Length: 404
Image (cartoon, rainbow, N blue to C red; front, side, top):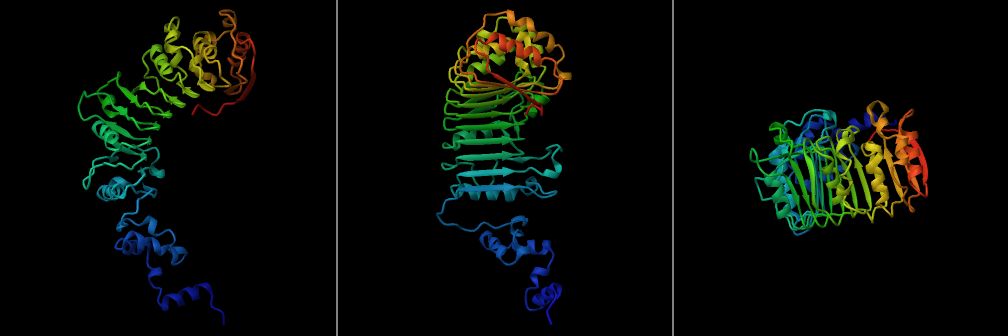
């Protein structure tokens, strides 16, 4: 007589595999006593063991000898599981990775079920109890939902001399002094920097509206800056940049500050500047004679993406960039919803077509305008572009899906 699946399972357990019938919590407890290598080997026992070791609350690192560690990640990806609740264990694992000459390290305390919650007790990075955060091998570092103080930030760059790639997402940077210096990203080795949704609580608490985040990286090739909480951006030495994408909030004080950012990015080949829809309106009356501050000619620029902040004052800044980017091949304009434009429609008027001499933009082959249906300034914008450029490019209009 053929055994049913249930009967077969019960029979196997009677014959010796009783541990598989234990609750996951008990089996997790058992795995916590095994060296990490042995715990991982349990994945071949049966399908129910395949992923069990990866969700164990604790694993014991085993000695790997002199074998270097290429990549090491710590993630909190379960409901109600936060790395902050296991700080000592996290510190131990990070120290283990550093001692193993890890080349890529990631710490991610993001919990998808708490996506919109406040980060109350993020992991304090670089405050290791078991070893100093020092490595001559670390090349890539990814941090998500961790916090760092300004001294730890300086130590990172001074103690990791070959670091090339740094990504910080939803992190907090604290100042160790009430009115201390500006947070500075300064490295001679870094080639790629991505900082998105980084907050600076001390700037918010003490209303430090003039707080700058300083980026001084002469070897930097790729830069991606997302929304920074109450903080402005200062680019000191980024002359090696090839690609730059910057999304800023309304904390920029003057149009001259925008021009300083543009001037620092004058060597890039691909540039994306997405500022809020109302940014240009704040500076409409300060743009009359300030375009000379933008840094001259953007000789290397091939691809340019802007939001509608560049359309104010009769599209003055947009036209300036087009006229001074002789090798530009593609332009993308991402316009926000019509209800956000306020008086922008009056500023970007067809009368602007007669306000300056047409210019050459010979290599520009494609202009893509992303907007919502019924956007009233698109027609005026197209008129200005066609009138101002001696060799009009192909212009396409695509549906608006939000400025990212």
